[in-house]
Amino acid sequence: MASLKQLAIRGTAWVVLTYGISLSLRIGSNLILTRLLNPEMFGKVSLVWVFLGALVLFSDLGVAPSIIQSKRGDDPDFLNTAWTIQVIRGLILWAGSFLIAWPVSQFYGQPELIALLPFMGLFLLFDGFNPTKRITLNRHLSMRHISTLEISAQVISGIILIIWAWLSPTIWAIASAGVISAAISLMLNIWAIPGPLNKFAWDKTAVKEILNFGKWIFASSAMHFLSTQTDRLVLGKLLSLSLFGIYNLALGIAILPSTLIEKVGGSVIFPSLTKLIHLERHELRAKILKNRGLVLSAIAIALALLVSTGDIIISIMYDDRYSQAGWMLSILSLGIWPLALTNTIGPVLLALGQSQYSALGNFLSFLFLIIGIPLGAHFAGDFGAVVAVPLSNTLIYFANLYGLWRERLLCLNQDFRTTAIFLGILTLFLAGRVAAGVGLPSFNLAS
Image (cartoon, rainbow, N blue to C red; front, side, top):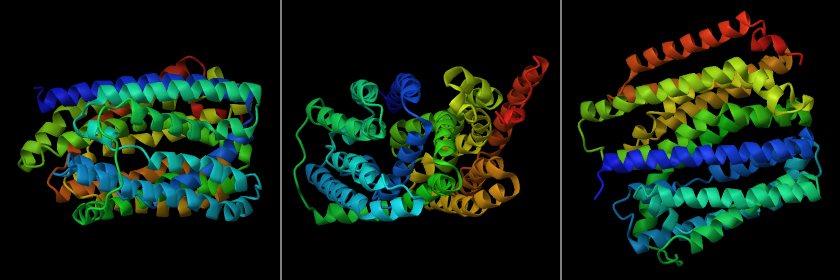
């Protein structure tokens, strides 16, 4: 039987491989779609995703983490109860998409949102019926099966989406992306994962355990939404829909390294750490430090490259309509570094049941954004509004730092060393740009 370390290494490899393939598929389909559809369509769909995300995160009961960390995580009664809660939540969320459609469309002055919200909200319904067999695979770090299903779903849904957009280049093509993907994922999870299907059940002990574990996850998820989506809520009102669509394109590229860390953290690190929390703090800290430095060094290179060549990347990948995404990508990528520091060690706090520090960081970030974006827009226009977004991430880092200090797991020396490496690499890349006569990314704001 494989050791925990071997399972973690194997799981990480599968997550990284899957993410790389998934990223390639997404970039490929995105390049095609941006040539078939206009930026305003992307802006409208991005707004809808903000509010669907609000429904999801303001109702997050932490069902999956509950199954992963619970001693009853393989108990059929516990799993069926968790699935029942998940289904009920999915039905309520889809109903919620109907309720918020009219107010949202009125606030942003976009009548199309009345129909778009409930249509795209179908993904909430499909997601709610996903069997817990997939979570069980995650619990036991069986990432190969999960990876195969994810890639299969993305390939099938991507092909359907591109054909739809080619035959009918309207907003409904891109709006269908999440719905098609969720429907295909549901079918694959039901038929391609071995094991019995869930049935409706209500074990009161299981309900109590899930809700007790999920109370801070609920708070943290709600704060996470406010922290990660307030920029879109505010900028969706301040910017034109076309520029807002361009902003979301730049942000989607900027967060790629951070998204990979979150996937590894949630799929591999968190399940692994739940099996190590019995260790003394100094032993647990040593195990975390051992590999974290190498991971952060790799992220430092990737982020420095994005910051220093953002405008070049955009000019190569997209046509002139999306040129302003260049300077946005450089600025937004710079703010991913505090998240990298946080997400490479944050799962240990969740494994210890201390998710309140994540909630605190997200709340502080939300407060900064709600004040900082309008102030930035007032003093420096679109540039100032965008700059406020990466600055807010530092507050998430400091809240996480406080939690690590309280739990005697602080890694401050490693944070300083890797930050110095990141800044050093970035300086070299920027100097190379200047030496080549290209200039600095911020010089291209008018493009």
